[in-house]
Length: 482
Image 1 (tube, helix red, strand yellow):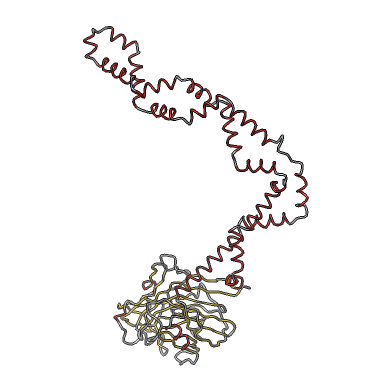
Image 2 (cartoon, helix red, strand yellow):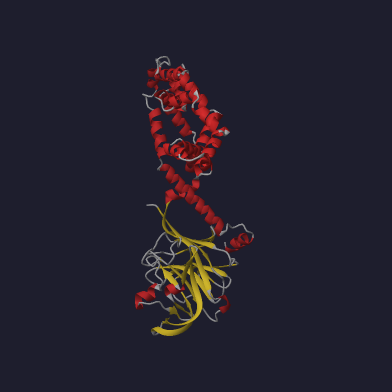
């Protein structure tokens, strides 16, 4: 199986993690769209209308509108009233003036500064004070003063084309009648009727009343049309299309029991304990195994950036603890730090599917791993464990013993994310990479298992690769419904 995988992988015949991500996101979107549709008012309305139209009483209603007529109807009365008002000389004049260029010019002048100045000067030069000042001066004194300048400006403005037009138009019979009609009950009623009789619903009603096929313009027919429109709508077409998609049957069969996308700025320690669980349980702190070069440094070596969690391995001196099978925990000075996470207190699974999208650099001295264990360290199921050539996956049933239930796969590209998947049902275990099965084996699982993520360092560490990042984009778990 691994040979087939490597061949297809190198030929580009295996889907990439990003392609599978896009496919999953599309599936989630379709699921959410379908759920939204199933809860929508549109679908509820469609089903209610269908029940109504399918009822025995619906056809009987056709006969109830046979005697309806346009003559004498409310619609005919409104149209007649509108026609009568439209023949009124006052309203005819109003409509003509309202649409004229003269009114536009009149309003433009009325809003201008020249007319305001003209009216102010007219008020001033026509006042008793002005006349009194003029009478008290000789002609020379008057001509040399501000009053004369204002008077001359008033005369000049009064002779301008705009002011002369404004005065003429304001006192014209057309404008006087326009003002008389403006705000009148007749005009208000005309405009109200004009709006009513030109509405599409009103026009449809008139056409319906004149139509001998009256049922097809009745409320019942509109209900049928409404149903037909819904039935033929883009909404229903998309709904039926989604209902037929076989891939969505996945959500009828499976529950998403864990969906970790690392959207928070910091590690959620309610979900992820940044410790070696067994070490923390035994001694209250994490420890390393003999032969490992790092000390686990908790959240100090955890980073979340762009919704991706990274376990960092660094070169830095720190005193930690090492488990020695002969004497137990002993302190040790390490030259490197790393991190380890577990979900023991938050999430465990006995049966189902776990998959993770991850990226790490292969190296003989730096190991990145995702494993499943229970109350005891063994048996241990590796979803994956990096090595110098690629990854290993399988089962360790005892500490320190070589496993015959293990597979190593080489050739994975370091700079690519990969999706590792493990399916556990009964005693059957199946491993997949980017959706392609690469290995299967059996194990009698008796308890729910939790997850462990870690980066460990071994031998003469390749310090050129430090700091080393073990990146986890997301982790998902599925369980069969029921």
